[in-house]
Every structure is written in structure tokens, then in C-alpha cells.
Image (cartoon, rainbow, N blue to C red; front, side):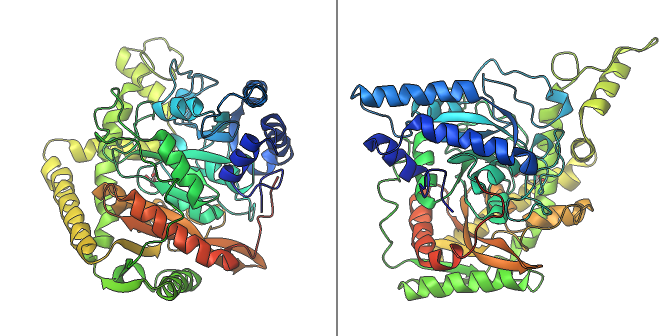
Length: 496
Ligand code: GLN
């Protein structure tokens, strides 16, 4: 499936605009026509900026006509997850708590995309405060999967994934704390990159788990992911956790295959609990790598299943602290005063009204686990597990260059199928450790499962050690090319 106008991906559209074979305004108008036609079916966007986007696209066309040099993303449409601050419109985190919030500043990532010429089309829906794996827990209604609108798109970057898959933008950005870019990318048949912690500034990303959160690209191709990473990465005085490294320049090298690639396959990833079609797709990818001359190495990651319990201590602990600021006084939704209310009652009611049930659950879990007497039993132990998980990855990466496995144990599930919170948490069993260890990971399409006559995308995950994005993306591009005959066999039911 191509973007409106027949362009395969953002890079192709960008090249067409730069060479004058496509006009940015036309591409932008076609995007909004798609959003109008399919917006109701998918609910990918909370808010769109049509007039503004068209004006920016026209300015790109004018610059080109005047012979001015165009920046690397000139005229391409980008969607922004609604927990990433934009001056334009609202930044709601899909929460009643921030239902009216307007950010006075742009996130660094957004500022850099716009400086590179990108046209921001709108803000996409997410699981409230990025807590969730399905796109069902959103103040503005659930998001649907373009491949089967009876199924979830995955989460929490639900709207960004659905919008990219359905051609309602050329690419999007999301955030990933434990899998929120990669799992919805897998469910929607697109590419999702969680960069190394510290690769992209978190300035303007509403904090969930500050030691885990990263912004990253959600795209139609590996080369698009490389290009967006190039445009967003690099140091930023406003975020002291950004690594002191220059921006990447991977778009230029991503087409080059890696010689002597060693692909590690962790035993623990090919679990019998996975959907058999998922395991089959991973095995097909291993075969494809073998056929390209790569070596497949068996590796052991015994702490894989410790990830979820570690994550569900660290992430809620950090969330309880980050979300303490929403008190209804300085920040966030304020409940109506009732006679006899004191300040504590007002805080309590504002937070009870403003936060949905999953967010409340995380705040309570986190507060409990940080409280005196429990801190050592939970939080301290989780930090010890975190260290060991990181060491385990380091050992694995001594024997291989990238790790291959499933992104999620199953393809997209039906709405309501994972209402039990623990079942929902298990969706992230293969993705949380990437964040816990601070390394990089990417999901890319590898084939399809069939459910009731419908094709559902399957994603596979590649992981590489910290700051090894070049290796990760080049290995991913090799696989993307090899798997193309399989991955192009079906198209989403809903597409612009
Ligand atoms: N699904 C995980 C959670 O609910 C991860 C979310 C994320 O990466 N933002 O916390």
C-alpha cells in the first residue's frame, strides 16, 4: 500500500517534492482527505491542524519554485503522539487531567522535525499517559486497527501507528517506555524504532517513567526511521539525560548490508506461549538472514521473564512521582469545590476525576512500592534486577551484533480480549527489557497471521546494544528487503 499519490514511503514523497514531481500542498490535501474519510473508523487523531499544515506545505512549494534549497523533510506530513508537547493545539495525554492543556513550548523533537521542513498534521490518541498496550484506554475513545477495525492497534502509541498504517500521514512519532512504539508498530504492520536512552531529547515529552521514556519514529520503512532519527537526535541543553553525541546520519548508510552479521536468537524468545504464526515468522526471518550469509547464534537471556515484574515496579514508581504534579491547583483538572472541602479533599477529588482507572492503579502501586518499609523489598530489588538485565544483554552482545525475536507474543487482539491488567502487561514481555537496559530496539513487519479470513500483521523485533543504531537499522533494512515478498502480500482494510 502506498501513500496518497503513489509514494511508497516518506523518503519517496520527500524526493518527489524536492524534484518537483509532487507538490507538498497536494500531498497534504490528500492526507486530510484521507483523515476525513477514515477518521471516524479509526479515531487515530484527537486534533488536526489542516489550515496551518496546508499553509506550511504551500510555503515549501513556494521555496522550491524560488529555487531555495529544501531541508531534509520539506513538505512531508508527520503526526505527533499527544503526550509530546506542541504549541499548536492541545497536549492532552488522552487524559481528562490535561483535557484543556495547551503547551507554551514545542518538544525538542517536534521543533527539530519542523526545522527540517516537516508539516505536523495533528495529535494522535494514546492510552492515557502512555500507560497501556491496546489503545483502548483513551479519554477520546478507543483507536481501531486499520487491518481489522474490530481489533486493537496496540498501544500506547495507538493513533500514531494506526495513522501511519492507514496512510493518514507520511510518518509519525511516538514514545516508548516499555514497548509503546514497537508493539503498536507490530500490530499495525509498520516500522517502529525505540532509540537508545539518551539518543533523542525528552524535553517536551510528558514524563511517565523518566529513566525509561524515549521518543522515536513510526514509519512505513526502515529508511524513513533512519531519516527521522537523523533529524531528531543529538544533544539538547534542555535535557541533561541526552547523550553527548552528535546527531546520527544513518539515512545515508542504511541501504548498505552488513558483512559477517551475527544474529543472536535468544532461546527464551521462542516460547510455546507465543502464537505459532508469530514463531513461524521469526523463524522465516532467521532463514532469510542465513540466506544472506549471516550467522545465527543461539544466545541465552534467562532474565527475559523477570522484565515484566521489574518494569512494573520501576515504571509505576517513577510515574507516581512524575504524576504527583497534577494536583488540580498548579496543574491539571480541578474538581468543583464543595462546601466543607479542605485542600486535601480538593486534591483527592481532582485526581480521582482527572485520572482514569489504569493511571490510578499505577500511581497507587508506585506510591506503595516507594513507601518506607517496601522500598527495599520492591524498588531496590528492581534496580538490582535492572543491573543484571543490562549485564545479561552485554554478555549476549559479545556473541552477536543484533538480537532477533518476536515483538509481541501475538498479533493484534480483539477489543476487550485483554481486560485483565496482568494479561495486558504480558503483551510487553519482549519489549520492556530494551528500556530497562537502555539499549535500542526496532519492530518491523515480517508476515501475516490469518484470523477469520483477515490478514493481521506480525512484527519481529531486532535489538542492538546502546548507541548501535547504525547496526540495528542496517540489519533491519537487510531483513525488510528480504521479507518484502511476504509483507507486501496484503493491505490494510482501511487505507487512504
Ligand atoms: N504497555 C506498557 C505500559 O503499559 C508500556 C507503555 C509505554 O511504553 N509507554 O506501561
